[in-house]
Length: 364
Image 1 (cartoon, helix red, strand yellow):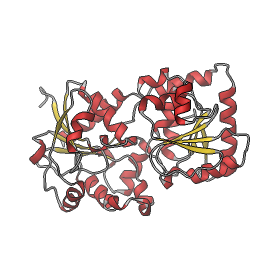
Image 2 (cartoon, one colour):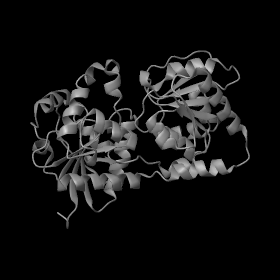
Image 3 (cartoon, one colour):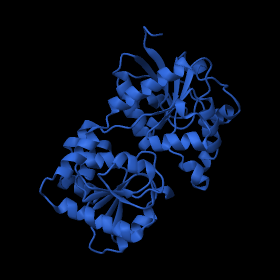
Image 4 (cartoon, one colour):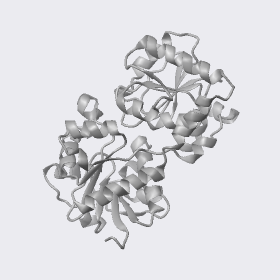
């Protein structure tokens, strides 16, 4: 095996539909893996209706495998054991990588599981009905996996402790920032008109999940009427008022411009596995305000305004400080250091760490 590429089968289901953070992770990782001669990557989608579309959304060179099959049925089976093994309908593999919390059943392949965060353990009542089995699926998958990938050391430590697995089999695979973010320009008039963007705005990028802290953000925003309006980007139902708006789902290309034009990016999450928008905003030289939780503290380092979760006055003050920082047109050493920090996170580095996890799993 040392003389040939590892045959890796990825769960590509997160690539279908409107992509959240897991979808962007899966896309960027698979694209980077395809460029590496040590890996022969394929992808499979677990869905009845959209399984053929996986061929259209995969990065160039990544092959698709699979057949129409219900993810819900598969998950119920994998709670009880490894049947049906994924190799039965996707072909032989050295490694099967569950990219989205769930490890497929395998025959001979080593199992690698990515656990992005443990929010589902803290607030299972916030899970959609279709995700009711997720907590137990992750527990079963974590025990069965030969290696586990997490985006931060904070998540790795939490997984080891709360899922009772060996820390030695958990590999930290930090996410990356696409180089295009470093050359992003603010939106032109056409883009501003299309999304109804005001001349100045505070920006949130993500889903409307309760764990994202949007109620806290809205209340803190009300405390200072001088702050720019709030703009929410992402899928879900957002609560808006006369000083906030929901611009909907935005393509990756348009998102870079929308972020680059913001007065500040805000990520007030109660819990977060990585917080990729934090680094992407830094790459655009946009100030960042985020909650002071372990993963965001790890990713942002000293380059964001960190606020204890739930501190209304603290968040309002941090938003004001970020806006003032953005208004200062003079380039600063902090600005240069912030962009350099973001540049240290690359998808190539993520892929290399993931390949280390593959090799670790195979050797076990």
